[in-house]
Image (tube, rainbow, N blue to C red):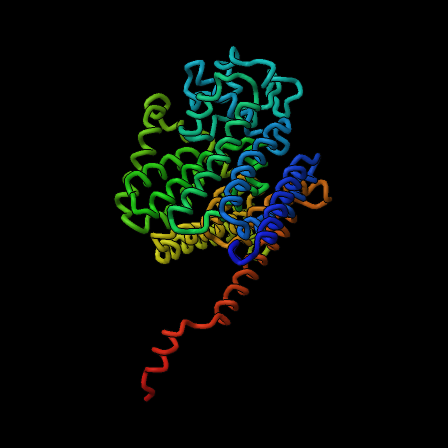
Length: 446
């Protein structure tokens, strides 16, 4: 129902109900422990309500949510489920000292003069022979690409530990909400869909509280989608390249975004990536890859043990090849079926399948999917984004991480398939346009 279908009293009631949902959502995000996961309930109600209020009120609600939710999560305290931000802080300080971040791991003797008690503390969970630290994996080089490293260096002079980066990532999350409203309006779509990003608990928690740099990559990817949907291959491709050079995950959008003018887009993206990597390559050479190869092996993607859904159905020795085959087939299908004027649906299919195949236990990997759902992919696909949370507290439930992954992602897959079947059934039941029926009846029978 559109806002024009109701009288003034009903419109006011909808506004008030949506505002109450936002207040409840904000309160639940601040709950201690894992109770903040209850915030998905008022979020679901808000997603239903906000598209049913008038656009002016919806704009206020989207912007308020987009600003207040990640800001509140940022101000809540230190990150509650990730320590990545401490690596960001360290990499920024290393660069301020004039040292390339890819040259040495944090525990290297050359970097001992940079240590202080804010990051190197006996309370740190990561210990090396000469001390403990909050920085994860202190014996290996950084994994983050150059655009992310540039951001870490830019924030480092503000001082502090996690708070400056939490506020920075919260600001990027709010910027994406505004960008989505603007882009959807310019593309002729309902801008109220931006609530799917602005109010999403995953966005507030992973951008605001855990301060993941993925939100910066998603901001650039969202801008690239808008530009490329508007047939601007050079600027869109350049922004797309910068998104990849912030966090590798946006490369998943390539099959969809390369559908129109692939050479111009690919060259622009490759040029942007090469430009930001070149200064580091000249200094450290192949070391710019950092810990990426080791990370993939550590996470079990090399030997196939991390593909939870596939591992439940197939022998372990074939899960990695089958996963690669599924992803390659999906990429080909996405490239062939993408509508260049609306690339977000096909791009979301690529991201969705990747998450279901790889079954990560890191919710921030799904920020890209949340953005694409806000553009126009089915809202129930957010179940796959939420599926990464149960594995994080599997131990407290008395089950293994693998079991939690299979259960959570299996349920999410069931939600996606159910939504697909219901949409197909609704499409079949929908009345056909009169002119189509007329043309069909006009065809002579043999």
